[in-house]
Amino acid sequence: MGTSTDVPALRRGLSVLQLLAGKPGPVSASAIARELNLPRSTTYHLLAELEQARFVTRLPAERRYGLGIAAFELGSAYLRHDPLERLAGPLLRELVERVGHNAHLGVLHGNEMLYLIKERPARPETLVTDVGVRLPAHLTASGRAILAYLPAAHVRALYPRAVSFVRRTDRGPSSLATLRTMLATERRRGWASEDGYVTPGFASVAHAVFDFGHRPIAAISVTMRHHCATDPCDADWSGLAAQVRATADDLTRRIGGRTT
Image (cartoon, rainbow, N blue to C red):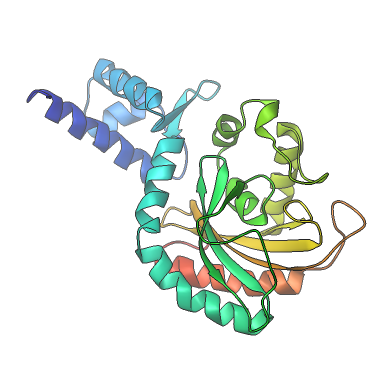
């Protein structure tokens, strides 16, 4: 059982996390100490403990600290438990009626996508993506729609070794360098896509859902029958992507998030 001295330390640690969550980018230890009125030694001790627990990520080159993977997973878990699904359900049904394809809501869980909702059109197509299914995030459009907006250190932590890049077909990124190139392209474009990375003969388009700090906490995707002879696919999905983005932006606003 903890002692009464653990409580102030816990409160200080939570204060550090709240401070980092409210900042647009990484923060130096000295800035954290100054804003929270903490001794520098205490600040470094708290940061070390939070880093070990993966709630904080240290960026040595910048000498700054940002939120870690555990903090991101905790925030995603909160939204998974009800509010996100309740708000997303009607929006996904409207999206399916407009585009006539399967639509999904998914969240990042480690380096996998966990699918929370699946809406089908009147004439559904059989897919491996279903509620509760997990798929490698780097292969899915929804996974990369989220990864594209995570700090480089987070992505590197999720894919520390070559064996992290599992493949389901002969397509998709197989190294961190390739993944980073794809994420940079998809972030500039504003949406992610894949053709045959998960299931041959099917393609997907996805856009991220953001929280109040413009951090990605989920993704909405649409999947349809399609096959490109080339990889990456040269099909024009901008029209479909605009529909997906409109739905993702609507959900972002409904949860109090920021679209830009």
